[in-house]
Amino acid sequence: MQTLNTEDFQKVVGKLAEFMQYCQRLKPADPYLIVNRNSPILTEAAIKAAENCRLDVRKLELSADKPYKHFPEEFLGLLRKRTPRGGMGLFDYSDHPDWSLKELGARIELLFEVVEEVPISWAHSPGITLDMAVNGPLQFNYNALAEEAETMLQKLQDIWELHITAPSGADVRIGIPEIVKFETDCLIIPPNIYGKPGKFGNLPIGEVWAEKGTFIEVHDNETEKKATQHYPVKLTANGTWICDVCIGGYDGRINPEKPVTVEFKDGVTTDFKCDDPGPRSVLEEMLTTERRYGLQTVLEEVGIGLNEKARLTGNMLEDEKLRGTCHLALGNIRYHADMLVDKPTIKATYVSGATKEIMKNGVLV
Image (cartoon, rainbow, N blue to C red; front, top):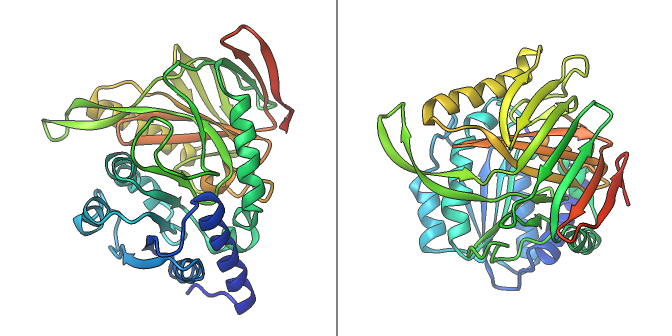
């Protein structure tokens, strides 16, 4: 059973109120929705924080005792028809680590088919834990982090290519298409950077990233029907990514002697290997997705962590925010897998032809 003492509970309440104030920029009387997925104590703290901010708060329970393939229409319909100004989805998978990967498709639907289509500021917490809230990245100075993220975004404007290397042996060059822009979860203020009415970002916050998707019609080989699904815009990566820290969808640290190695050619995943069956299962899910929809898995995202309170825990929701790290994400239909490296060196080439080192051995320049 989840419990917090009074002092820790109030500490979390205070930080969640800061987040609503500085990152979501909400005002008194704004309607606010808190969704509880096996996270009762944090839900209670979020309700108290919203009340302290004088928001008009409402709670919704996602109580199924198995992973959702699609979230209930009660939830999705509420967002579409009675859209609150802000909201927060608290998904704690501590008791069921495998649910994180199994609910991934439903979460992708929620974010790209619902949240981005309505004028809402949405905090997305897939994998949040009490420890993360009390002792980790939730305990950051939100005002300071929001200001730093804005400065970082200025450095990342007009990027043409990133060259990323890391002690793991990773060495990859990533072309950033003109239509793909960098954004941050440190300021979740709609509309989003691509002009969609709603914006979402992770909670805990603490990264800047480049990613864009589009909706396409695909043939589902499992159902033998056509469907409209979200598919990523390809970042044109070439090289090798050796991930020896953690990978999204796998609960735990990667054994550095058995890393995840992914090869990229023009942004397409051409090969992968991992001798550890745990993280390898995430990559095998990628192959399942490719067979089902007949589409290539591509490099979907590049992200940089900024949060000094984040720790390496084996939980990607926290780990990808860790200051001094960088992650790439593989993407396909209903599939997204972040792969983290520590202490990278990142060199940027701009559209103008100028070059600049923005991180050296994990230290922001």
